[in-house]
Amino acid sequence: MKQKNQLGFTLVELLVVIAIIGVLVAIIFVALDPATRFQQARDAVRQNDVHEILSAVKLDQIDNGGSYLTSIAGLSAGNVYMMVNGATMTTGCDDQSVAGNCDTTITADGSCVNIAGLVTEGYMDAVPVSPSLSSIVTWDDGSGASDEGTGYTLSISSTGIATVRACQSEYSGNSEIEAAR
Image (cartoon, rainbow, N blue to C red; front, side, top):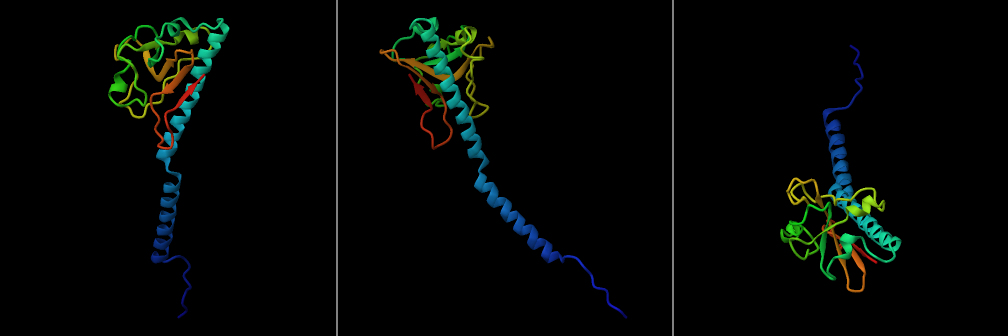
């Protein structure tokens, strides 16, 4: 009788290959660290938004002969205000700061500043809202009036320097996200 030569892989060989592929996938997954990449991406959005808002505030000031937008001009020097989209959100601006979800301490519950005028005047396409660290953090006052906080703060120094900060910075390598001019 003639014996046939059977071609193929044995079960042991297949299991070894599957184990090697599994180890490689695990190493690649750990090396890429998607959670950190998402944190860095959200922080990059915040950094971009901070610079966009500050540029809009300063361009508006330059175009108006050195005067800030009316809602910004009335701010008390040194206080920190939550920027909001609309005039009806006048309370709840420090809620996330009090809850510990904001890197910046907002001065008081009513420390809100409406920056919707920067959109109306064409300095921004829309009022940016900080990407949330979790679904629990919302910047809205809960009134349902469709005006919402942005997750960004504004303070004006006694010398007129505007500082815009992001309430959150997720990536441990970042300090507070801010820009000043």
